Amino acid sequence: MTILVTGAAGFIGSALCRRLLEDGLTVVGLDNFADYYPRWMKERNIASLRGTRRFTLMEADLAAVDLRPVLKKSEAVFHLAAQAGVRSSWGAQFAVYVRNNIEATQRLLEAAKEARSLGKIIFASSSSVYGLTRDLPMAESSVPRPISPYGVTKLAAEQLCALYHANFGLPTVSLRFFTVYGPGQRPDMAFHKFFKAILAGQSLPVYGNGRQTRDFTYVDDIVDACLAALRRGKAGGVYNIGGGHRETLNRLISLFKRVCGRPVRVAREGNQKGDVPHTFADIDLARRELNFGPKMALEEGLRREWEWVRDLYEEPAAPLRDKG
Image (cartoon, rainbow, N blue to C red; front, top):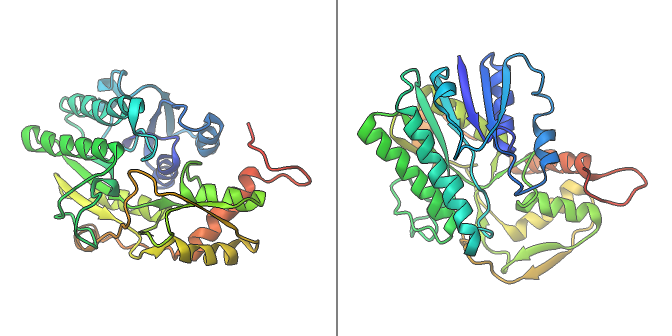
């Protein structure tokens, strides 16, 4: 079975590719190595995949490349490629989000219309589509009210998947990921930034009063959900994928102290536009239809990411600096 994974060199994409290969599948990974964060980090993500007999890497722009040849040879697609980041999606950068999140998704779906072998197209959506929805926990039936341009583009891409399923019968499934963390996490994401600051003896930048809550989901649980959607997801379906619990940022500070065994200082900063006060996933539908259930405890997941960040940056008897 051949699987196409877009965004294959990214945080979730590379973890998914590893699991697919471990399961004996053939993987074509596509990534454009956008400069949103350093290329060497993405190269590190896929270093163990390069040279693997059943893995092929295509370095290409999803919004420009002819996808028909690879789709004709694929039996499923995991569409994880996207322009990430809530806070950087405002202003002139919005055009990049429209191109990479909406236009690229539409081109993929158009090309998929001709690929008769595709059994499933799994789209990586986001909890950002909910925004200021009035429901907590957030259910798939909740009215989306995104409050960031990023959230708007993810919702638009998700709606395109629904349209192509309804009009052309494409077997699309959308998974709304809630705050993914773990080894390989992007450097712009909170835990990565926090652990890097702790390693350098710097203060943690905490926006707002710290009482906002998030539903944190470990990357391996996300990968489990992707594979469950491939096997059991209903065409046209939308599923929340969360960690099953939520925590305040303030409580995380004590966890960081315990996990890292180092002093933790906090620098309070103002609220950021586009940040929602709370996220919490209702995952009952994913439990029933996908047989999905998160397994990783938050403290253990944080410990694993901390060890990964230490390995990423720390050099004996040398100041902390970016490798590359």
